[in-house]
Image (tube, rainbow, N blue to C red):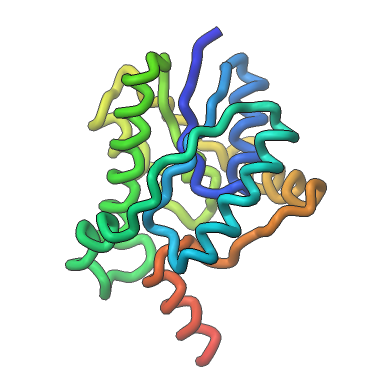
Length: 182
């Protein structure tokens, strides 16, 4: 059975992605690495959902280092970019690089990410980044296909877990709040 290290952006997205990978015959280990999430209490809320994911999906989840200073350093020049712009590409790349690094260190066959389950993320761009990093090891699975996002929401509801309402970074939070004020 091929082993895959799955970058997890949040518990909700993890449910549908893990279920699909298992159904396709993979042995899945999760990797929660998200230095982009802000503020800290939001990060902690999302991290807490991992306990339910571990239990219900019966997988190991490795937690990466939470280093928002490094994320801000990489993304500072893109603060004014809209959601889905250049800042997001830098963020995707940062998280995929770390997932690839860990997958090699721990001898996984493949790596991939839950980011593709979101209807708000540009799957083609995520695939391009993953393939550029390591074409042979990157699983380019569009988890939103086969009603993946719908299934993720169903499982999150079934297990009564927190479901966030913005991508996670401070800039997306500000953008969301501006839209609410209008």
